[in-house]
Image (cartoon, helix red, strand yellow):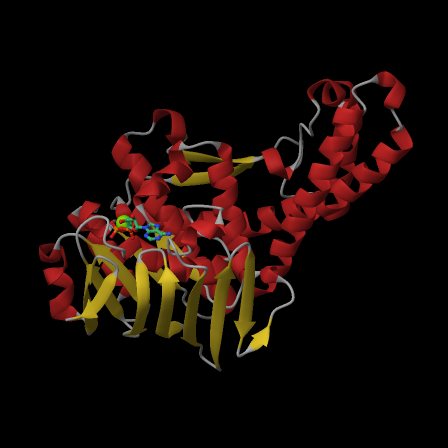
Amino acid sequence: MYIKKILLKNYRNIDNTYLDLNPNLNIFIGNNGQGKTNLLEAVYLIATTESHRTNRDSELIQWDEDSALVQLKLIKTDYDLTISYKIEGRDKKIKINKNPLEKISDLVGNLNVILFSPEDLKIVKGSPSNRRKFLDLEISQVNPYYYHLLKEYNHILKQRNNLLKKMYNKKNRDLNLLEVWDDKLTDKGSKIIYKRFQVLNKLKILARLAQRKLTSGNENLNIKYDSTLKVSKKNEKEEIKNIFLNTLKKEREKEFERGYTLSGPHRDDLLLKINEINVRKYGSQGQQRTVALALKLAELEFMKSESGEYPVLLLDDVFSELDKNRRNTLLSIINERIQTLITTTDSKDINKLLKKNNNNIYNVKDGVIEKR
Ligand SMILES: Nc1ncnc2c1ncn2[C@@H]1O[C@H](COP(=O)(O)OP(=O)(O)O)[C@@H](O)[C@H]1O
Ligand SMILES: [Mg+2]
């Protein structure tokens, strides 16, 4: 798939911009603070319904304006579609081919993107929530049902946690009521874990291949699902549900004390190892960067294998930071097959790209994006 056109109105520091993108490479050059990431963020928003930088939509509206609009025309193998996303105060209105969407979450799965940014290192080094987000976002884009499942799970989790807090006082304990919530939570939760195991099985093979490619065969990456429950990839959904239910029962008293749900997919993690060594704890900076890149490359191939189409790549300020080997690996993958939007502050950086590919180059200055 590729983005043919983008229209932005009052999106952050970009007033009114219309771009006719190249199906292959699009390079955005500008100093810091000019609006390059803002543009990529707008594309990311259409893919995921969320900004990668804030969860307050109102921040996306240009200061002193009431609304912001992102509209794009997407070309897929079999069909085209136009998506429009308008943020007005606290409201958002999304249309696909002029038809309003009832649920915002129905947007996910139309445009698939993978964003590479310096923040990716967090997937390796950061807290478990970063790794869960990485996996969840990946699955959601190729399986919108999973995205709904996550939303439902989080909703149930919140209600259950509220109930636990109320039941702190022994007199208020209604165990029958809690069990109703246990059932709902474990029903959705077991489906989430089951799906994560399935996807991870494929993803870890792709990541392993990418890591080998990036290190000339020297490093073996291994990814393991590190659950708060005693589950394994061999378990069926029903078994996972039972294990989850039993764990909740066992942890009752602790949960009343703490006032939240201690185990479940919302607290699970991924364990990343190179040659059997925990990368998060003991990996060198270079290894950690390579793993972050390998995970992203795996994501890319996974999306292609699941949806039949490559996603759109967004490379935000990362190209200049890659060494020659990683850069070439990335380029050999893009290789005129994948639409890519690259931002950089340094135009020298991209000279190498220009010889090989057909591309559009844009200057970005003070929110104005102009084709060279
Ligand atoms: N809601 C907004 N309205 C207007 N300008 C904004 C808004 N949010 C951020 N900006 C401006 O956008 C600029 C940052 O743009 P960004 O795309 O992150 O820069 P870069 O080109 O370095 O990637 C800053 O100058 C910031 O002041
Ligand atoms: Mg930026």
